[in-house]
Amino acid sequence: MNDLTLLRELGPEGPPLTPAARSTARAALLAEIDGPAPRRSRRPSRTAVFRVGVAAVTAAAAWTAAVVITGPEAVDGPRPGPGGLSMVATEAITFPLSPDPAPPGMTPSFTGSAGSTEAIAGYTFPDGTGFTVYLSPTEPVWAADQFQPSEIADSGTTTVGGAEAHYVVGSTERTCTLANVCFEDLAFAQLVWERAPGQWVNLYGEGRHGDLAALAAVGGSLVDRPQPIRLQVELAPAGWSLVDWHESSGAVTFVDDEDPARVLGVQCLPQAPAGVHEMDNGSAEQRIAAVTPIDPVVPTEIGGVPAQLVRAHDDVDPTIRFWMAAWELPDGTVCTVTTPEEFSPDDVLTIAGGVTYTP
Image (tube, rainbow, N blue to C red; front, side, top):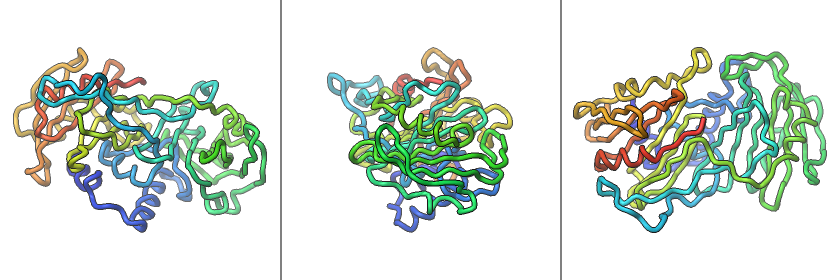
């Protein structure tokens, strides 16, 4: 099954999820995130990696947290692109808080969707441990429903940034991260407090951040300073809106406001080192070779680097046709843009030319 099939079945054009479906999907997502070791599916891991890219993030955003932003906004009004579509400049995709100072040696990753007041930011060491910040407008579910009683060493209240916070500390059984590093009795800590009216923070840490004092220091360092995600899409067609983004799968998704079945997907992923996780991002050539072409692949350039462009069809439903552009950045990151067939090649390349990725 290719990306377009997954987009059709799991993306914004799919049927609305019932509460039961959301609950089941969330449980399945968390079970996948928790990794291969025997662990309870109780919280999202900051090392989550989805194998199916754009389609998975579209589906996952139905139940994961997100940041409110407005979607594409015109700068001096829409301007015609070389392929005929009117293009508008998009707003930067950001997470609203930053730790000050930035934690050294850690990689941030953000998840969100437009139109929600929730947000997730994860900070990870190379071994896969770290801490995760969950923002929500209401008080989150507390530890009694998230941990096994045998895992909890202590719980109570403390102070974070002048506000009363509930805490729980303990250690898990054998735990393996997606960095293929396993731990026995991995220490964890969790803090929950209302940082501002209508802004609850659920802060979870493992390893060196599984210490209550260390985690409270992280909580006290949070400031109101938006952070841009690594993948930004600077241009989008007028009348299209941002839907969601998930940095673990390197994906950003837009849909047509008048027809949400029309999806524009952008993905940028570093090629994974051998043994780090199961996802095989492949080269630009491999991404193009994975779809079923209608016409011969066209060599081109995007941002001054070699690229490939192809018009292809879905491998299950040949009536679903699309364009895909793929190219590799100098640091080895592979990017793709997938659009409906109605876009012209110049439209696709214009959008791709506005894609930026900061390692």
